Image 1 (cartoon, rainbow, N blue to C red):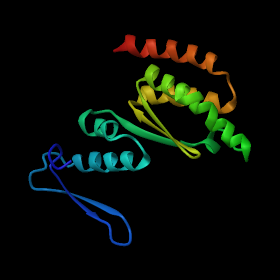
Image 2 (tube, helix red, strand yellow; image 1 turned 180 degrees about the vertical axis):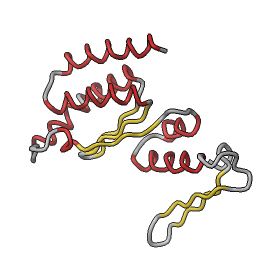
Image 3 (cartoon, helix red, strand yellow; image 1 turned 90 degrees about the vertical axis):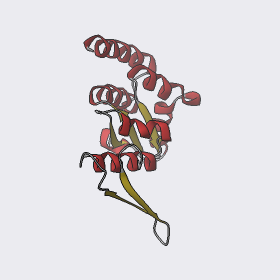
Image 4 (cartoon, rainbow, N blue to C red; image 1 turned 120 degrees about the horizontal axis):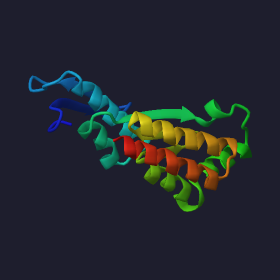
Length: 156
């Protein structure tokens, strides 16, 4: 952040962990401060460093977060664990398939799902994850993702 965005970064570890960001005299664009905040929050949410750096390097990359209870309110106990299991799949295969098809990154943290990518691709990944939470079979979702991803690729 100090090299690319020219921001001043201060991290305090006494009592509470805090990261403070400020514009330096060398900062070109005041919006770089927001990119720095987005980078730090993405890293804290659980994205890998290289994935979080995409926010800084590429314009139009965002993080969207939602809870499983936002999709289906009545899930309790073991049903929540099953919903998380459907999202992740065996050895993370379902999550990786959604990531690869939509060119996004997904982090499942307890009952919260974080998606990193462009707006259009986040929408496709979120729809697929919501369908998994509701109970649709993964094979049906993969077919939909493939068609929607091919439409996105053809528009660019």
